[in-house]
Image (cartoon, rainbow, N blue to C red; front, side):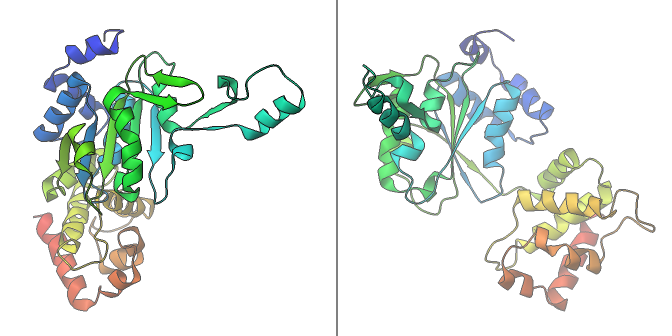
Length: 305
């Protein structure tokens, strides 16, 4: 691959990007591959929305691994402030400098503590990093406004120092679970991708890639059960992440990896004893009555036909 990342992106094709996804076991359909390709070529942030567990965060991890660069992650939360996202001053070090009578400004760069956004802009690696701004919908509108300068010009203004701009703009992935609407100003600065919940066939392909030791019939049954669970009025339906957790748990217990005697099939006991991998609310667990369990096991059987 070319040494210059921009040359690499300029020559990047959907086929090469798909190969990157395949090499990292990320199952990407054409709309995902094309939108990611455009974001890379145009140098635009990519806003990825979808249900929890749909693979939004994993996309950023895959790009960092595929392009052999660093992943810098900013996890958003309610009340997130500039000091946690951009920078803050090392007050202890400033105080020590004053007490020592040093002839230097306490607002020199040596006293600056980088947080994820500033660290991504000042990254000194051979390639620009992947900046993951995860679950932006958890932060408030004031934080969105803070992001606009970063996303528009890939720079940040520090009153005591001046403007710091990125030599090489990072690859920016912003995720949202759609718990609230985002501002038009933020959306205008991004390309947009909505990740749909996976079909049974796609989820099965994901499980086979991520948990290759799992028997194919059991993998199909696992996806059949999780797909059927999503039809129930659950407080928190299982996402792909929960499906993978469950598949790994089953193999750990010897189900579907050749360690357990008998047929490689899912039993009611398997489901009930490992349901904590799939459901994370007590109300959802309590919905697994005999009728629902029969429907889940029927879905498991149907998926293996």
